[in-house]
Length: 157
Image (cartoon, rainbow, N blue to C red; front, side, top):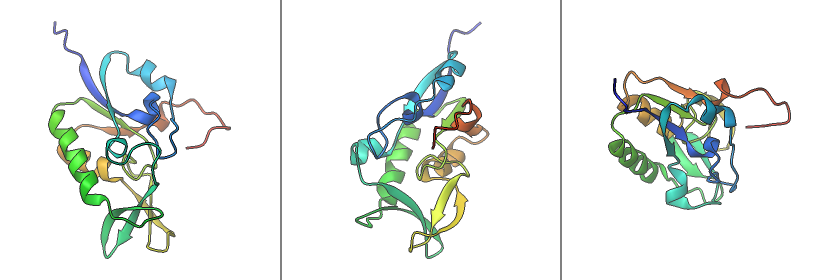
């Protein structure tokens, strides 16, 4: 019997790291409890690039393409985020599971608001990291934290 643990990538903010744009965390203890048998690999592509706290980013639909743009300065950070995410994937080529933060412009999987250039919601989709991970980790299920959380009506995403 092998003693090698299965590997799971988990959004760092839901593990309790203070890496969100506002310097806060979205820790969900049920996730670390549920993943006790795994080697947990924390993931946040934004914090190493932009620091914490930082300007908020949005997923925009611009000229038929999804772009990641900073909220106030309107800087397109899509390419630098893609490079950071692809470097992370290269460091971790084999994983067994992925748990990402819902609604995040980076990590949301089918739950991220997509805005137009006027910042009006025009749909939902997957964040940039979720999209790249879906391609890189073919056959690995990507899920979000919502399936682990016990409902707390006072808590928001």
